[in-house]
Length: 367
Image 1 (cartoon, rainbow, N blue to C red):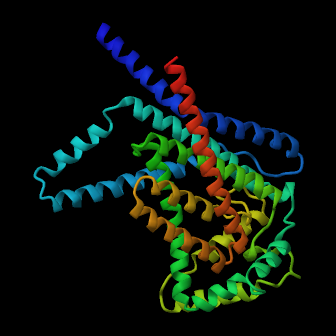
Image 2 (image 1 turned 120 degrees about the vertical axis):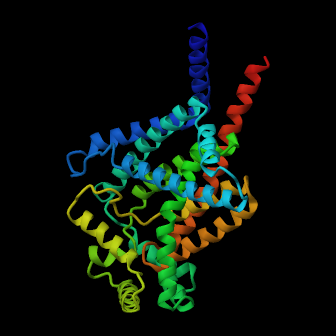
Image 3 (image 1 turned 90 degrees about the vertical axis):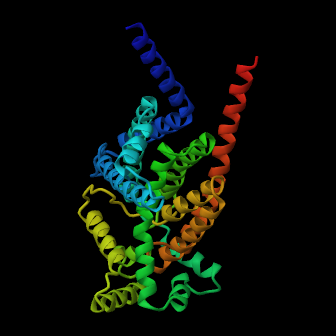
């Protein structure tokens, strides 16, 4: 009994120690909750959206299940290549080893709850952007795009270089892959990453990017994006040629029995959700800044500290996402430029904060 009590005490102590390492994550998410709550109180009379706490939790669970099965398949073929005997024994031994630290499981559950709360805040704020600050900056970003690209709209440059419908298919697939890749990486840093400093830096940067860039800046620089601007303002026809071209390319891909219409379907889903003011999962229209670019750049930066070869792959992926966001009509080019620059600055800020924390703890321990 005494030994069991001591074991429980050790587990609680380890859980507390691990949770304390994430103190800045909890403080920052608590800060976002306060801001979101006050915004909710101030604008509740003019917005039709409700705050949904469990909106993304089921999605996170689905991602975890999908990644678990993917890892199981990877493990199976890896053992086959190694000509491992007793595959199932090796599989279950590895699983038991992964689950042998109860404090790690408890901390992971806490992190899951934390990220669910945070994404619920983000989703709510994204949905009410037009209620707080109607899309004022589309014209500005259109002009800025042309100014930065010698009087030519970036989508025209993209479609002149990547003119084939199969490029559009590739960009569609890349945009779809982004969801699995980013959320898979979040789970990797939450559970598996052994470099404690990089794990904390990535997660803190992730939260800071999505709130400071994806929520606050998105409200201040409210814009709908090329794919929606003509629907909001029929007189704005700058991007109708782009949308007509994409529609033609999608039709040609359907004729070839190649699925390439995912972007247009998601855009229609978002537009219907916006028009009906329905609080669907993932709903909300916002262009500036591009969180697809921000999160991709953050992943490339963080993995550079772990594996430089993999980081190169993610930098290439970030470039593809940047081009895709313009090519498919989701974003103005400046959305991606601003997002990338601010993400680098936030990464540096997060590292500075965590280094200061480590320095303070070191001095406290040795004085």
